[in-house]
Length: 273
Image: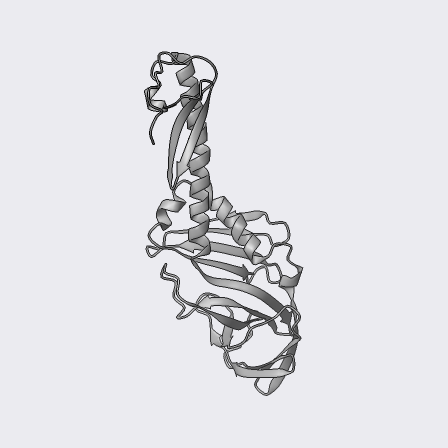
């Protein structure tokens, strides 16, 4: 932080270059002259005004690059340390009257969308979507995973037509899964295939794409400095069953939110919310 003793900007001749020294989160600009004398930029007032203008412009460009990079790095650290739900493997299949899906990964416990990340545990969800007009209120199930069976009942989602049940297991890409759905004494069977195995974009890549996109927005980092919670999920919709996307979102305690939907084949952002 000190200039060389005796340096006099009025007497310095020859070529010079701009040096920026970084220390922690700070940047210190210096001018280096051919005479090996170094002076702080603020002491170089005797330079020709056009030279000084050029230096200021150069410093401005450097500063924008430096701080954009620092902001992106900081956002990346905040985002990756805030994930409260991360999907790993996703299976799907169907019966005559139901679309069936099963996915697993890591999720906070207890599960609460409050802008604060909790401790992560392994989780698995079995979900069904009945055909339109089909009454699925009393459906029971048995899930057979690599010859191991798990039975239970479903709960209706408050958001859509689906029913879901939590299982205390973890799915792997090569698992063999059959789901038996029992309703009014009748049983329908679905063989599930791992659709996420065909994704070109995996969960960590989807996160990187989203974070890079959010880093280009000026206000995102400020929103999440005091706390944020993130999710990286595989989604589909009632209208587009069988078409899958990565959904990456971040939100704080005030429910300020940013989110993107990413094509798992191309990595293209198809929706920005």
